[in-house]
Length: 176
Image 1 (cartoon, rainbow, N blue to C red):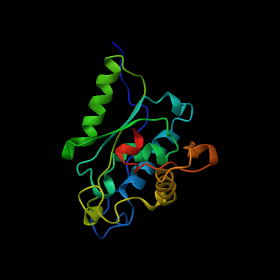
Image 2: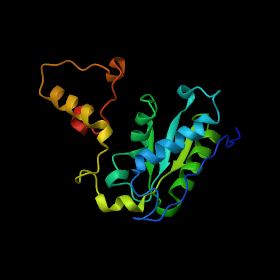
Image 3: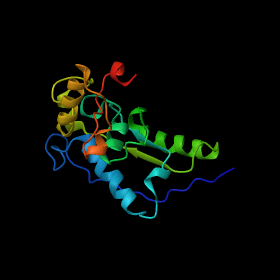
Image 4: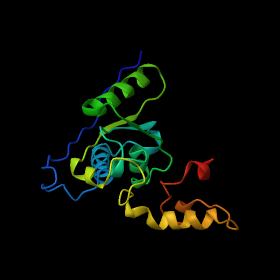
């Protein structure tokens, strides 16, 4: 049975909800910074060798919604990397570590990112996907391209080939 080991770990500072130094940082941006910092500690790892990004989140909605794990993967530039968001409330990130361990032991992969994020300060923007001000403005241009594509007459092309970021907020009907 393969053994699982943790090769890198990072932690963000802790801030006061609604008042602290992290109150204006979106949870998807914070998680992206932390995952990037963890990966920077192991430069010999080829990101294409990562099997999955598992991200725990006690309140996966609002700014933490839209499968935040996949949003983080795309923000990192790892469009090839699947992401799964896990909700087990206070033990969500611990659950992702367990899931990675189980996957490695079962032979389903070798390299997993186990992470977690929570931002009580962002709850004010809503607790469900689609409420106002919950989508990351980083993806505004990508959403505009998707809307134009949905009108028809334009063939889809990989936005990364043009140095652009893809739309992580595509509706289910557009991805099928």
